[in-house]
Image (tube, chains in turn green, red):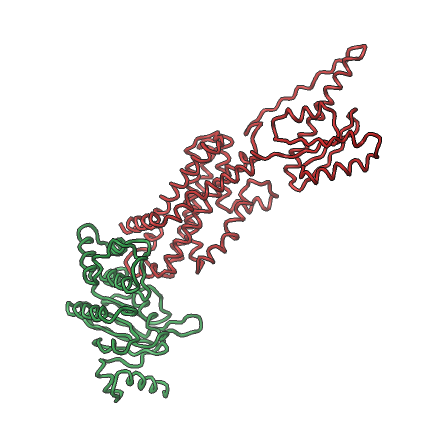
Amino acid sequence: MDAIRIDHLYKKYGKKEALRDVSLTVPEGQIFGLIGPSGCGKTTLVKIACGILRADGGSVELFGQKMPSKDAVSHLGYMAQAAALYPTLSGRENLAFFGSMYGMKGAALREGIERVAALVDLTEDLGKRVDQYSGGMQQRLSLATALIHRPDLLILDEPTVGIDPVLRQDIWNELRALAGEGTTILITTHVMDEAEKCDTLAMMRDGEVLAIGSALNLIERAGTASFEEAFIAFGRKEEEK
Amino acid sequence: MRTRALTKRILSQLRHDRRTMALVLFAPLLILSLLYFVLSGTGATYNVVIGEAPASVVQYLEDQDELSLRLIDVNGKKWRDGKSDAASYSDSVKEAVIDQEAVCGVIVSDDLKDIHLLIDATNSGDAAKVSSAVMKAIQDEIAVRREDALADLPFKVDMDEPDIERTYIYGKEDSNVFDSYGAALIGFIVFFFVFLIAGINFLTERTSGTLEKLLSTPIRRHEIVFGYVAGFSVLALIQTVLVTLFVIYVLDIEVAGSIWYVLLFNMLTAVCALSMGILISSLANSEFQMVQFIPIVVIPQVFLCGIFSLSRGWDIAGHFMPLYYTADGLQKVILRGAGFGDIWQDLAILLGFSLLFLLMTIRYMRRLRNW
Protein backbone atom coordinates (compact mmCIF):
# COMPACT_ATOMS: atom_id res chain seq x y z
CA MET A 1 0.00 0.00 0.00
CA ASP A 2 1.17 3.52 -0.72
CA ALA A 3 1.73 5.79 2.26
CA ILE A 4 0.57 8.84 0.33
CA ARG A 5 -1.50 8.99 -2.83
CA ILE A 6 -2.19 12.44 -4.25
CA ASP A 7 -4.60 12.69 -7.19
CA HIS A 8 -5.09 15.72 -9.43
CA LEU A 9 -4.79 18.25 -6.66
CA TYR A 10 -5.81 21.87 -7.28
CA LYS A 11 -5.54 24.82 -4.92
CA LYS A 12 -6.11 28.51 -5.47
CA TYR A 13 -5.44 31.46 -3.19
CA GLY A 14 -7.77 34.07 -4.61
CA LYS A 15 -6.79 34.18 -8.26
CA LYS A 16 -3.34 32.74 -7.82
CA GLU A 17 -3.05 29.05 -8.59
CA ALA A 18 -0.86 27.49 -5.92
CA LEU A 19 -1.27 23.91 -7.15
CA ARG A 20 -2.26 22.80 -10.63
CA ASP A 21 -3.10 19.15 -11.26
CA VAL A 22 -0.54 17.66 -8.90
CA SER A 23 -0.45 13.87 -8.70
CA LEU A 24 2.12 11.70 -6.98
CA THR A 25 2.40 8.59 -4.85
CA VAL A 26 4.84 7.86 -2.06
CA PRO A 27 5.47 4.16 -1.34
CA GLU A 28 5.87 3.06 2.28
CA GLY A 29 9.35 3.26 3.76
CA GLN A 30 10.66 5.82 1.26
CA ILE A 31 12.21 9.20 1.73
CA PHE A 32 10.38 11.29 -0.81
CA GLY A 33 11.65 14.79 -1.54
CA LEU A 34 9.70 17.73 -2.88
CA ILE A 35 12.15 20.16 -4.38
CA GLY A 36 11.61 23.55 -5.90
CA PRO A 37 12.12 27.26 -5.29
CA SER A 38 10.13 29.02 -2.60
CA GLY A 39 6.63 29.85 -3.78
CA CYS A 40 6.42 26.75 -5.98
CA GLY A 41 3.63 25.22 -3.90
CA LYS A 42 5.59 22.74 -1.76
CA THR A 43 4.25 24.01 1.53
CA THR A 44 0.68 24.18 0.19
CA LEU A 45 1.02 20.59 -0.96
CA VAL A 46 2.26 19.26 2.38
CA LYS A 47 -0.37 21.23 4.29
CA ILE A 48 -3.10 19.67 2.21
CA ALA A 49 -1.49 16.26 2.71
CA CYS A 50 -1.57 16.82 6.49
CA GLY A 51 -5.20 17.84 6.43
CA ILE A 52 -4.49 21.38 7.63
CA LEU A 53 -5.61 22.96 4.38
CA ARG A 54 -8.52 22.04 2.13
CA ALA A 55 -7.86 21.48 -1.56
CA ASP A 56 -10.12 23.00 -4.22
CA GLY A 57 -10.03 19.83 -6.29
CA GLY A 58 -8.49 16.38 -6.28
CA SER A 59 -7.87 14.08 -3.34
CA VAL A 60 -5.25 12.92 -0.88
CA GLU A 61 -5.13 9.46 0.68
CA LEU A 62 -2.84 8.51 3.55
CA PHE A 63 -2.49 4.74 3.98
CA GLY A 64 -5.60 4.27 1.85
CA GLN A 65 -7.71 6.67 3.92
CA LYS A 66 -9.13 9.72 2.25
CA MET A 67 -7.98 12.94 3.91
CA PRO A 68 -8.90 14.70 6.05
CA SER A 69 -9.25 11.70 8.35
CA LYS A 70 -8.87 11.62 12.11
CA ASP A 71 -7.56 8.08 11.98
CA ALA A 72 -4.95 8.84 9.34
CA VAL A 73 -3.48 11.86 11.12
CA SER A 74 -2.84 9.85 14.27
CA HIS A 75 -0.18 8.00 12.24
CA LEU A 76 1.25 11.25 10.97
CA GLY A 77 4.00 13.46 12.32
CA TYR A 78 4.18 16.98 10.89
CA MET A 79 6.94 19.49 11.25
CA ALA A 80 6.01 22.94 10.05
CA GLN A 81 8.36 25.33 8.31
CA ALA A 82 8.41 27.84 11.14
CA ALA A 83 9.04 26.19 14.49
CA ALA A 84 5.49 25.78 15.79
CA LEU A 85 6.23 25.81 19.51
CA TYR A 86 5.01 27.56 22.63
CA PRO A 87 7.82 29.97 23.51
CA THR A 88 6.91 30.49 27.16
CA LEU A 89 6.86 26.75 27.88
CA SER A 90 9.90 24.57 28.46
CA GLY A 91 11.08 22.04 25.90
CA ARG A 92 9.68 19.24 28.06
CA GLU A 93 6.28 20.95 28.38
CA ASN A 94 6.12 21.39 24.62
CA LEU A 95 6.90 17.72 24.00
CA ALA A 96 4.49 16.58 26.70
CA PHE A 97 1.72 18.71 25.20
CA PHE A 98 2.11 17.42 21.65
CA GLY A 99 2.56 13.88 22.92
CA SER A 100 -0.72 14.06 24.78
CA MET A 101 -2.41 15.32 21.62
CA TYR A 102 -1.66 11.84 20.23
CA GLY A 103 -3.14 10.25 23.32
CA MET A 104 0.19 9.50 25.03
CA LYS A 105 0.31 9.64 28.81
CA GLY A 106 2.12 8.51 31.93
CA ALA A 107 5.26 6.41 31.55
CA ALA A 108 4.89 6.08 27.76
CA LEU A 109 4.85 9.87 27.45
CA ARG A 110 7.87 10.30 29.72
CA GLU A 111 9.84 7.66 27.82
CA GLY A 112 8.79 9.21 24.53
CA ILE A 113 10.06 12.62 25.65
CA GLU A 114 13.45 11.20 26.70
CA ARG A 115 13.76 9.20 23.47
CA VAL A 116 13.09 12.08 21.05
CA ALA A 117 15.06 14.57 23.14
CA ALA A 118 18.10 12.30 22.93
CA LEU A 119 17.49 11.92 19.20
CA VAL A 120 17.73 15.65 18.56
CA ASP A 121 20.37 16.18 21.26
CA LEU A 122 18.25 18.36 23.57
CA THR A 123 18.23 16.17 26.70
CA GLU A 124 20.21 18.76 28.65
CA ASP A 125 17.98 21.64 27.60
CA LEU A 126 14.54 20.16 28.22
CA GLY A 127 13.97 22.26 31.34
CA LYS A 128 14.72 25.56 29.61
CA ARG A 129 12.05 27.80 28.19
CA VAL A 130 11.84 27.60 24.42
CA ASP A 131 12.25 31.36 24.00
CA GLN A 132 15.75 30.88 25.39
CA TYR A 133 16.57 28.29 22.70
CA SER A 134 18.62 29.23 19.64
CA GLY A 135 16.97 28.99 16.23
CA GLY A 136 18.64 25.64 15.57
CA MET A 137 17.50 24.25 18.92
CA GLN A 138 13.93 25.31 18.23
CA GLN A 139 14.12 23.61 14.85
CA ARG A 140 15.33 20.40 16.52
CA LEU A 141 12.63 20.55 19.17
CA SER A 142 10.10 21.07 16.43
CA LEU A 143 11.36 17.90 14.76
CA ALA A 144 11.16 16.08 18.08
CA THR A 145 7.47 17.06 18.49
CA ALA A 146 6.78 15.42 15.14
CA LEU A 147 8.53 12.20 16.18
CA ILE A 148 7.24 11.70 19.70
CA HIS A 149 4.37 9.33 18.86
CA ARG A 150 6.49 7.17 16.50
CA PRO A 151 4.49 8.08 13.41
CA ASP A 152 4.41 5.82 10.36
CA LEU A 153 4.52 8.85 8.14
CA LEU A 154 6.62 11.92 8.71
CA ILE A 155 5.94 15.11 6.77
CA LEU A 156 8.71 17.67 7.18
CA ASP A 157 8.58 21.16 5.70
CA GLU A 158 12.15 22.39 5.19
CA PRO A 159 13.43 20.76 8.37
CA THR A 160 17.09 21.64 7.95
CA VAL A 161 16.82 25.36 7.26
CA GLY A 162 19.13 27.29 9.54
CA ILE A 163 20.74 24.21 11.05
CA ASP A 164 24.51 23.88 11.07
CA PRO A 165 26.06 21.31 8.72
CA VAL A 166 27.12 18.84 11.42
CA LEU A 167 23.64 18.73 12.88
CA ARG A 168 22.09 18.57 9.46
CA GLN A 169 24.20 15.49 8.82
CA ASP A 170 22.92 13.99 12.09
CA ILE A 171 19.33 14.69 11.20
CA TRP A 172 19.71 13.07 7.81
CA ASN A 173 21.30 10.01 9.40
CA GLU A 174 18.36 9.85 11.77
CA LEU A 175 15.83 10.16 8.96
CA ARG A 176 17.64 7.42 7.07
CA ALA A 177 17.48 5.19 10.17
CA LEU A 178 13.74 5.88 10.58
CA ALA A 179 13.15 5.02 6.93
CA GLY A 180 15.08 1.81 7.54
CA GLU A 181 12.57 0.95 10.24
CA GLY A 182 9.74 1.44 7.77
CA THR A 183 8.79 5.10 8.41
CA THR A 184 7.74 6.94 5.28
CA ILE A 185 9.13 10.44 5.02
CA LEU A 186 7.91 13.30 2.85
CA ILE A 187 10.34 16.19 3.00
CA THR A 188 10.48 19.53 1.23
CA THR A 189 13.67 21.38 0.49
CA HIS A 190 15.08 23.98 -1.81
CA VAL A 191 18.65 22.82 -1.30
CA MET A 192 19.72 20.78 -4.32
CA ASP A 193 22.39 18.71 -2.57
CA GLU A 194 19.87 17.60 0.06
CA ALA A 195 17.57 16.41 -2.67
CA GLU A 196 20.06 13.81 -3.72
CA LYS A 197 19.69 12.11 -0.34
CA CYS A 198 16.06 11.26 -1.07
CA ASP A 199 14.95 7.97 -2.61
CA THR A 200 12.51 9.67 -4.95
CA LEU A 201 12.12 13.30 -5.89
CA ALA A 202 9.39 15.46 -7.30
CA MET A 203 10.60 18.66 -8.93
CA MET A 204 8.08 21.45 -8.52
CA ARG A 205 7.71 24.86 -10.09
CA ASP A 206 4.80 27.30 -10.21
CA GLY A 207 2.40 24.86 -8.62
CA GLU A 208 3.17 22.03 -11.00
CA VAL A 209 5.23 18.87 -10.80
CA LEU A 210 7.87 18.94 -13.54
CA ALA A 211 9.25 15.47 -13.10
CA ILE A 212 9.36 12.56 -10.64
CA GLY A 213 12.13 10.01 -10.21
CA SER A 214 15.31 9.23 -8.33
CA ALA A 215 18.09 11.79 -8.50
CA LEU A 216 20.13 9.62 -10.86
CA ASN A 217 17.14 8.84 -13.01
CA LEU A 218 16.28 12.53 -13.35
CA ILE A 219 19.85 13.48 -14.27
CA GLU A 220 19.87 10.72 -16.88
CA ARG A 221 16.54 11.76 -18.37
CA ALA A 222 17.64 15.38 -18.59
CA GLY A 223 21.00 14.38 -20.03
CA THR A 224 22.87 16.77 -17.78
CA ALA A 225 25.93 16.46 -15.56
CA SER A 226 24.40 17.56 -12.24
CA PHE A 227 21.05 17.52 -10.46
CA GLU A 228 20.87 21.29 -10.47
CA GLU A 229 21.26 21.39 -14.25
CA ALA A 230 18.61 18.69 -14.55
CA PHE A 231 16.17 20.90 -12.63
CA ILE A 232 16.84 23.78 -15.04
CA ALA A 233 16.48 21.50 -18.05
CA PHE A 234 13.08 20.17 -16.89
CA GLY A 235 11.96 23.70 -16.20
CA ARG A 236 12.84 24.76 -19.72
CA LYS A 237 11.03 21.79 -21.24
CA GLU A 238 7.90 22.81 -19.36
CA GLU A 239 8.14 26.37 -20.68
CA GLU A 240 8.42 25.12 -24.26
CA LYS A 241 5.16 23.19 -23.93
CA MET B 1 -8.10 13.89 27.81
CA ARG B 2 -6.79 16.17 25.04
CA THR B 3 -8.97 18.93 26.40
CA ARG B 4 -7.29 18.49 29.76
CA ALA B 5 -3.82 18.60 28.22
CA LEU B 6 -4.76 21.80 26.40
CA THR B 7 -6.16 23.34 29.57
CA LYS B 8 -3.01 22.41 31.44
CA ARG B 9 -0.88 23.94 28.71
CA ILE B 10 -2.82 27.22 28.78
CA LEU B 11 -2.45 27.43 32.54
CA SER B 12 1.31 26.81 32.29
CA GLN B 13 1.57 29.48 29.62
CA LEU B 14 -0.34 31.94 31.76
CA ARG B 15 1.75 31.13 34.80
CA HIS B 16 4.91 31.89 32.85
CA ASP B 17 3.48 35.06 31.37
CA ARG B 18 3.72 37.35 34.37
CA ARG B 19 2.79 40.51 32.53
CA THR B 20 -0.47 39.13 31.24
CA MET B 21 -1.31 37.81 34.68
CA ALA B 22 -0.63 41.18 36.24
CA LEU B 23 -2.73 42.89 33.58
CA VAL B 24 -5.70 40.60 34.03
CA LEU B 25 -5.59 40.52 37.81
CA PHE B 26 -4.54 44.00 38.83
CA ALA B 27 -5.51 46.35 36.02
CA PRO B 28 -9.22 45.83 36.80
CA LEU B 29 -8.57 46.82 40.42
CA LEU B 30 -6.76 49.96 39.30
CA ILE B 31 -9.54 50.93 36.92
CA LEU B 32 -12.27 50.24 39.45
CA SER B 33 -10.44 52.33 42.05
CA LEU B 34 -10.15 55.22 39.61
CA LEU B 35 -13.81 54.93 38.68
CA TYR B 36 -14.66 54.88 42.35
CA PHE B 37 -12.87 58.14 43.04
CA VAL B 38 -14.21 59.80 39.93
CA LEU B 39 -17.83 58.72 40.26
CA SER B 40 -18.30 58.83 44.00
CA GLY B 41 -16.76 62.29 44.08
CA THR B 42 -14.89 61.46 47.25
CA GLY B 43 -11.94 63.68 47.89
CA ALA B 44 -13.01 66.47 45.55
CA THR B 45 -13.32 69.98 47.03
CA TYR B 46 -15.31 72.63 45.21
CA ASN B 47 -14.58 76.33 45.40
CA VAL B 48 -17.49 78.67 46.01
CA VAL B 49 -17.02 82.41 45.77
CA ILE B 50 -19.10 84.32 48.29
CA GLY B 51 -19.65 87.75 46.77
CA GLU B 52 -22.18 88.81 49.30
CA ALA B 53 -24.37 86.75 51.57
CA PRO B 54 -25.91 86.96 55.01
CA ALA B 55 -23.62 85.40 57.61
CA SER B 56 -26.27 82.79 58.45
CA VAL B 57 -26.29 81.52 54.85
CA VAL B 58 -22.51 81.24 54.89
CA GLN B 59 -22.79 79.40 58.20
CA TYR B 60 -25.22 76.89 56.67
CA LEU B 61 -22.80 76.30 53.84
CA GLU B 62 -19.96 75.74 56.24
CA ASP B 63 -22.02 73.35 58.33
CA GLN B 64 -23.37 71.15 55.56
CA ASP B 65 -21.46 67.89 55.20
CA GLU B 66 -22.69 66.54 51.87
CA LEU B 67 -20.05 68.24 49.77
CA SER B 68 -16.61 69.45 50.58
CA LEU B 69 -16.77 73.16 49.81
CA ARG B 70 -14.12 75.81 50.10
CA LEU B 71 -15.80 79.17 50.64
CA ILE B 72 -13.89 82.12 49.31
CA ASP B 73 -15.15 85.36 50.73
CA VAL B 74 -14.16 88.13 48.38
CA ASN B 75 -15.48 90.64 50.82
CA GLY B 76 -17.94 91.96 48.31
CA LYS B 77 -19.75 94.12 50.80
CA LYS B 78 -16.86 96.51 50.95
CA TRP B 79 -16.64 96.78 47.19
CA ARG B 80 -20.25 97.48 46.92
CA ASP B 81 -20.50 100.19 49.54
CA GLY B 82 -21.49 103.20 47.61
CA LYS B 83 -19.14 102.57 44.76
CA SER B 84 -20.61 100.68 41.86
CA ASP B 85 -23.86 99.51 40.38
CA ALA B 86 -25.21 95.94 40.47
CA ALA B 87 -24.06 95.01 36.97
CA SER B 88 -20.42 95.86 37.41
CA TYR B 89 -20.56 94.26 40.81
CA SER B 90 -21.67 90.89 39.44
CA ASP B 91 -18.93 91.21 36.81
CA SER B 92 -16.39 91.40 39.61
CA VAL B 93 -17.80 88.25 41.22
CA LYS B 94 -17.74 86.55 37.83
CA GLU B 95 -14.06 87.38 37.50
CA ALA B 96 -13.44 86.04 40.96
CA VAL B 97 -15.19 82.75 40.05
CA ILE B 98 -12.95 82.44 37.00
CA ASP B 99 -9.80 83.42 38.90
CA GLN B 100 -10.47 81.06 41.78
CA GLU B 101 -11.58 78.20 39.49
CA ALA B 102 -14.75 78.12 41.52
CA VAL B 103 -17.90 76.26 40.50
CA CYS B 104 -20.26 78.87 41.81
CA GLY B 105 -20.33 82.52 42.82
CA VAL B 106 -23.01 83.66 45.26
CA ILE B 107 -24.59 87.10 45.58
CA VAL B 108 -27.42 87.23 48.07
CA SER B 109 -28.75 90.48 49.40
CA ASP B 110 -29.30 90.80 53.15
CA ASP B 111 -33.06 90.78 52.78
CA LEU B 112 -32.82 87.60 50.64
CA LYS B 113 -34.80 89.31 47.89
CA ASP B 114 -32.03 89.33 45.29
CA ILE B 115 -30.29 86.08 44.72
CA HIS B 116 -27.76 85.74 41.92
CA LEU B 117 -25.73 82.58 41.32
CA LEU B 118 -22.86 82.69 38.82
CA ILE B 119 -22.20 79.13 37.77
CA ASP B 120 -19.35 77.54 35.85
CA ALA B 121 -21.08 74.51 34.33
CA THR B 122 -18.08 73.19 32.40
CA ASN B 123 -18.74 70.08 34.44
CA SER B 124 -22.51 70.09 34.59
CA GLY B 125 -22.67 67.42 37.28
CA ASP B 126 -20.46 69.37 39.67
CA ALA B 127 -22.32 72.58 38.89
CA ALA B 128 -25.65 70.97 39.71
CA LYS B 129 -24.39 69.49 42.96
CA VAL B 130 -22.78 72.70 44.20
CA SER B 131 -25.55 75.07 43.18
CA SER B 132 -28.17 72.89 44.78
CA ALA B 133 -26.16 72.87 48.01
CA VAL B 134 -26.01 76.68 47.86
CA MET B 135 -29.75 76.95 47.15
CA LYS B 136 -30.51 74.64 50.04
CA ALA B 137 -28.55 76.88 52.41
CA ILE B 138 -30.42 79.91 51.16
CA GLN B 139 -33.79 78.23 51.43
CA ASP B 140 -33.04 77.08 54.94
CA GLU B 141 -32.40 80.68 55.86
CA ILE B 142 -35.58 81.81 54.13
CA ALA B 143 -37.57 79.26 56.09
CA VAL B 144 -36.09 80.39 59.38
CA ARG B 145 -36.84 84.04 58.69
CA ARG B 146 -40.38 83.28 57.60
CA GLU B 147 -40.99 81.47 60.83
CA ASP B 148 -39.54 84.35 62.82
CA ALA B 149 -41.75 86.80 60.95
CA LEU B 150 -44.82 84.69 61.61
CA ALA B 151 -43.96 84.44 65.28
CA ASP B 152 -43.82 88.25 65.50
CA LEU B 153 -47.39 88.64 64.28
CA PRO B 154 -49.96 89.66 66.90
CA PHE B 155 -52.13 86.70 66.01
CA LYS B 156 -51.08 83.11 65.59
CA VAL B 157 -50.80 81.66 62.11
CA ASP B 158 -50.90 77.92 62.12
CA MET B 159 -48.55 76.85 59.39
CA ASP B 160 -47.35 73.33 59.91
CA GLU B 161 -44.36 72.14 58.04
CA PRO B 162 -45.46 69.68 55.36
CA ASP B 163 -44.69 66.15 56.40
CA ILE B 164 -42.39 64.81 53.70
CA GLU B 165 -41.55 61.17 53.83
CA ARG B 166 -39.11 59.53 51.46
CA THR B 167 -38.95 55.77 51.34
CA TYR B 168 -36.02 54.38 49.37
CA ILE B 169 -37.29 51.26 47.63
CA TYR B 170 -33.84 50.50 46.26
CA GLY B 171 -30.63 52.31 47.05
CA LYS B 172 -30.11 54.72 49.92
CA GLU B 173 -30.31 58.45 50.51
CA ASP B 174 -26.52 58.72 50.38
CA SER B 175 -26.05 56.47 47.32
CA ASN B 176 -23.62 58.06 44.90
CA VAL B 177 -23.07 57.57 41.19
CA PHE B 178 -20.55 54.80 41.77
CA ASP B 179 -23.07 52.84 43.77
CA SER B 180 -25.52 53.02 40.87
CA TYR B 181 -23.12 52.41 37.97
CA GLY B 182 -20.50 50.41 39.83
CA ALA B 183 -22.59 47.26 39.85
CA ALA B 184 -22.73 47.16 36.06
CA LEU B 185 -19.18 48.42 35.62
CA ILE B 186 -17.74 45.45 37.50
CA GLY B 187 -19.25 43.22 34.84
CA PHE B 188 -17.94 45.38 32.05
CA ILE B 189 -14.38 45.35 33.36
CA VAL B 190 -14.39 41.59 33.81
CA PHE B 191 -15.75 41.28 30.28
CA PHE B 192 -13.21 43.60 28.69
CA PHE B 193 -10.06 42.01 30.08
CA VAL B 194 -11.09 38.41 29.58
CA PHE B 195 -12.25 39.18 26.04
CA LEU B 196 -8.93 40.74 25.17
CA ILE B 197 -6.64 38.16 26.75
CA ALA B 198 -8.52 35.08 25.54
CA GLY B 199 -8.93 36.51 22.06
CA ILE B 200 -5.31 37.46 21.67
CA ASN B 201 -4.09 34.14 23.04
CA PHE B 202 -6.24 32.20 20.60
CA LEU B 203 -5.05 34.46 17.82
CA THR B 204 -1.42 33.87 18.72
CA GLU B 205 -2.10 30.15 18.46
CA ARG B 206 -2.99 30.80 14.83
CA THR B 207 -0.35 33.35 13.87
CA SER B 208 2.51 31.41 15.46
CA GLY B 209 1.68 28.29 13.43
CA THR B 210 0.91 26.18 16.47
CA LEU B 211 -2.75 25.92 15.51
CA GLU B 212 -1.71 24.32 12.22
CA LYS B 213 0.54 21.98 14.10
CA LEU B 214 -2.37 21.22 16.43
CA LEU B 215 -4.59 20.55 13.43
CA SER B 216 -2.11 17.96 12.16
CA THR B 217 -2.90 15.94 15.31
CA PRO B 218 -6.12 14.00 15.92
CA ILE B 219 -7.52 16.64 18.31
CA ARG B 220 -11.17 17.50 17.65
CA ARG B 221 -12.44 21.01 17.05
CA HIS B 222 -14.58 21.05 20.15
CA GLU B 223 -11.67 19.74 22.22
CA ILE B 224 -9.64 22.78 21.18
CA VAL B 225 -12.44 25.19 22.00
CA PHE B 226 -13.37 23.57 25.30
CA GLY B 227 -9.70 23.33 26.30
CA TYR B 228 -9.44 27.07 25.81
CA VAL B 229 -12.63 27.75 27.69
CA ALA B 230 -11.53 25.59 30.62
CA GLY B 231 -8.06 27.15 30.77
CA PHE B 232 -9.26 30.71 30.68
CA SER B 233 -12.14 29.98 33.00
CA VAL B 234 -9.59 29.31 35.72
CA LEU B 235 -8.02 32.69 35.06
CA ALA B 236 -11.43 34.31 34.89
CA LEU B 237 -12.40 32.72 38.20
CA ILE B 238 -9.34 34.13 39.95
CA GLN B 239 -9.98 37.54 38.42
CA THR B 240 -13.65 37.47 39.29
CA VAL B 241 -13.03 36.57 42.90
CA LEU B 242 -10.38 39.26 43.21
CA VAL B 243 -12.53 41.96 41.61
CA THR B 244 -15.62 41.03 43.58
CA LEU B 245 -13.84 40.98 46.93
CA PHE B 246 -12.05 44.22 46.11
CA VAL B 247 -15.23 46.03 45.26
CA ILE B 248 -17.05 44.79 48.31
CA TYR B 249 -14.35 45.01 50.96
CA VAL B 250 -12.04 47.77 49.73
CA LEU B 251 -14.33 50.08 47.79
CA ASP B 252 -17.08 49.24 50.22
CA ILE B 253 -19.93 48.79 47.79
CA GLU B 254 -22.87 47.48 49.67
CA VAL B 255 -24.28 44.29 48.19
CA ALA B 256 -27.95 44.00 49.04
CA GLY B 257 -28.16 40.43 47.73
CA SER B 258 -25.86 37.45 47.95
CA ILE B 259 -22.16 37.79 47.15
CA TRP B 260 -22.36 34.36 45.55
CA TYR B 261 -24.73 35.69 42.92
CA VAL B 262 -22.32 38.55 42.22
CA LEU B 263 -19.56 35.99 41.72
CA LEU B 264 -21.81 33.85 39.57
CA PHE B 265 -22.70 36.77 37.30
CA ASN B 266 -19.09 37.83 36.96
CA MET B 267 -18.03 34.28 36.20
CA LEU B 268 -20.68 33.81 33.53
CA THR B 269 -19.76 37.18 32.06
CA ALA B 270 -16.14 36.05 31.89
CA VAL B 271 -17.10 32.81 30.15
CA CYS B 272 -19.21 34.80 27.72
CA ALA B 273 -16.32 37.22 27.12
CA LEU B 274 -13.84 34.49 26.45
CA SER B 275 -16.13 32.63 24.07
CA MET B 276 -16.78 35.89 22.25
CA GLY B 277 -13.06 36.69 22.26
CA ILE B 278 -12.23 33.33 20.70
CA LEU B 279 -14.93 33.79 18.07
CA ILE B 280 -13.86 37.33 17.18
CA SER B 281 -10.20 36.34 17.05
CA SER B 282 -11.11 33.89 14.29
CA LEU B 283 -12.01 36.93 12.21
CA ALA B 284 -8.79 38.83 12.95
CA ASN B 285 -5.44 38.27 11.32
CA SER B 286 -3.24 40.08 13.79
CA GLU B 287 -3.21 41.36 17.34
CA PHE B 288 -3.76 44.84 15.97
CA GLN B 289 -6.91 43.76 14.15
CA MET B 290 -8.09 42.15 17.36
CA VAL B 291 -7.72 45.49 19.13
CA GLN B 292 -9.63 47.14 16.28
CA PHE B 293 -12.64 45.02 17.17
CA ILE B 294 -12.84 46.55 20.64
CA PRO B 295 -14.63 49.78 19.59
CA ILE B 296 -17.03 47.72 17.50
CA VAL B 297 -17.98 44.85 19.77
CA VAL B 298 -17.06 45.96 23.30
CA ILE B 299 -17.52 49.70 23.74
CA PRO B 300 -21.09 49.91 22.35
CA GLN B 301 -22.12 47.31 24.90
CA VAL B 302 -21.21 49.71 27.70
CA PHE B 303 -23.52 52.40 26.37
CA LEU B 304 -26.33 50.04 25.53
CA CYS B 305 -26.12 47.75 28.55
CA GLY B 306 -28.94 49.58 30.28
CA ILE B 307 -27.15 51.68 32.89
CA PHE B 308 -28.02 54.80 30.91
CA SER B 309 -31.61 55.71 30.18
CA LEU B 310 -32.12 55.19 26.47
CA SER B 311 -34.82 55.70 23.90
CA ARG B 312 -36.86 52.62 23.12
CA GLY B 313 -35.03 51.78 19.91
CA TRP B 314 -31.61 51.80 21.51
CA ASP B 315 -32.89 49.91 24.48
CA ILE B 316 -34.09 47.13 22.20
CA ALA B 317 -30.69 47.07 20.49
CA GLY B 318 -29.14 46.61 23.93
CA HIS B 319 -31.12 43.43 24.43
CA PHE B 320 -28.93 41.74 21.83
CA MET B 321 -25.77 42.30 23.83
CA PRO B 322 -24.49 40.01 26.59
CA LEU B 323 -23.45 42.89 28.84
CA TYR B 324 -27.08 44.03 29.03
CA TYR B 325 -27.90 40.93 31.03
CA THR B 326 -24.76 41.21 33.12
CA ALA B 327 -25.59 44.80 34.03
CA ASP B 328 -29.23 43.97 34.65
CA GLY B 329 -28.40 41.00 36.84
CA LEU B 330 -25.65 42.69 38.82
CA GLN B 331 -27.83 45.73 39.49
CA LYS B 332 -30.63 43.49 40.66
CA VAL B 333 -28.35 41.60 43.03
CA ILE B 334 -26.20 44.46 44.30
CA LEU B 335 -28.74 47.28 44.49
CA ARG B 336 -32.01 45.47 44.96
CA GLY B 337 -30.96 42.30 46.74
CA ALA B 338 -32.65 40.11 44.17
CA GLY B 339 -32.84 36.37 44.72
CA PHE B 340 -32.55 33.54 42.23
CA GLY B 341 -36.14 33.89 41.08
CA ASP B 342 -35.44 37.39 39.78
CA ILE B 343 -32.14 36.71 38.07
CA TRP B 344 -32.35 33.24 36.56
CA GLN B 345 -33.40 34.65 33.21
CA ASP B 346 -30.35 36.89 33.03
CA LEU B 347 -28.15 33.95 33.98
CA ALA B 348 -29.75 31.70 31.38
CA ILE B 349 -29.38 34.28 28.61
CA LEU B 350 -25.71 34.83 29.45
CA LEU B 351 -25.16 31.11 29.35
CA GLY B 352 -27.03 30.98 26.06
CA PHE B 353 -24.79 33.69 24.56
CA SER B 354 -21.69 31.76 25.66
CA LEU B 355 -22.94 28.53 24.09
CA LEU B 356 -23.91 30.34 20.91
CA PHE B 357 -20.45 31.90 20.56
CA LEU B 358 -18.75 28.56 21.24
CA LEU B 359 -20.88 26.70 18.73
CA MET B 360 -20.20 29.41 16.15
CA THR B 361 -16.47 29.07 16.77
CA ILE B 362 -16.61 25.29 16.44
CA ARG B 363 -18.75 25.68 13.35
CA TYR B 364 -16.33 28.26 11.91
CA MET B 365 -13.42 25.87 12.42
CA ARG B 366 -15.08 23.45 10.03
CA ARG B 367 -13.16 25.25 7.33
CA LEU B 368 -10.12 23.70 8.92
CA ARG B 369 -11.28 20.16 9.59
CA ASN B 370 -14.39 18.06 9.73
CA TRP B 371 -14.03 16.22 13.02
